[in-house]
Image 1: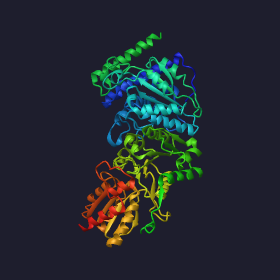
Image 2: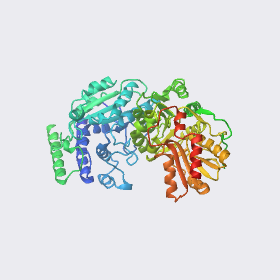
Image 3: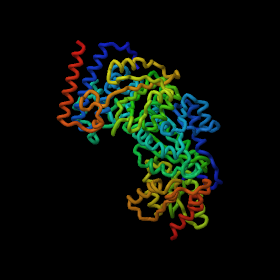
Length: 296
Length: 323
């Protein structure tokens, strides 16, 4: 993990501008490829951007550096947010991603992440409940190797219904993996309805604490300043020292940033029609102009 | 040319579960690097227990949570480790099927899943029987599936697997396995079957402990009926040595498979598919556990009940050739 100076206003604004680009790029990618999971992809934009542009020691143009920080997207169906970030950081053009998306033997990108097709992806994922056990293993390997790198893993909140997460919460806490950070993108909606109604997992903070994790809550995980203030507190733990792994609950909004998608379970997955795409892009641009105006 | 076997020796039991961990200990003592995971299934007094005690910084217990163990083993391998993961076979194949498929095989990592308690060797009834694993493993891409015939062969597989690229399952019994090979200085290559006995009337193709039982059955058939039995040790179920199968089919014209697995989906099915696609029209029989949850009893008693002992195998082969 990089050493970072405390977050300041100018960096927050730069990161917010990045989120604006990522939202537009994400919508454009999904409009062109005809499939995606926009709800969860939009909810995680701020946390993912903060990680890739401020906190992770990771170079998209040299993605297999041994000492890189590892980010595992356990909610692998939200791959297009990552692809858009990789593109924004210079690894791919938008046209290349569109041309090489799920195109049989030439595929470089899939709806679910594949580490061999896209080398910036750490783990081939898609089946839920796999990322956290893998992250625990990576963090243990980091301890064995006395490595300076850290492991970050992001799950959804609905995903926590998979029991393997709780097995890994147990082992991560048991081994006191101070080089491991879990981020729960708590957008409060899963495929068919509110998580609290489908299978409630609250009070999540208490449960994670009870499993031996150091829990931090971001009240609004779509507010960049709040995201950075919490991520700034993740210590530069060495991998040897036994200390609690960190769990960050990012309270986000599914479909955040697009008016007709926000908080709407209908936008869990699927494509995007021309009318909806044009409306969404116009809305994102309008919101960005308003945001900038508010800084004057 | 058949290798030197224990054909003329009394049965000598040796635990692959003990032997493989002794091999890992030797490898660690030689300075070779790897990680080891387990799930509350390693006794302190066992060979693996001694490995854990001597090299604690590379050994990780996941408690009773096989999917977490297998997933974490994937994570370690993605971080550059070669991982040996000892898992109770029935819980590896059934409870962790998703992790084997997605974490280990799809991510194509250097994890060696050591599935213990093959067949009914766990005893204790169907919850602890490992009878469907080969059927599952055969259908998973990237996965190499090894079923060593005896403890010494298991050690060969363990050592060679350190530098093998890609995921692997190594399937062994719970307790003692009879030694098939008197001389362990033979060539062992993943994917290349071993001709244990030469024969002219029928060829038995087997893997794991049943290789020894088949060898004893061959001895009976020769002594009692003058039947010449060839025997192939198909220690790698995937990728399958189809060349060895078709060569045997051409030479003896009759094929029998023997395995401690359901007759559905395992070695017998793999051999049958190979033969039929090649136009084989000779006699063929699968010997294994039938399509039912096994009766309760000791390992030897259950295998005897289902004809998976030397006497039962000899009777089945004799019936196939004479009826």
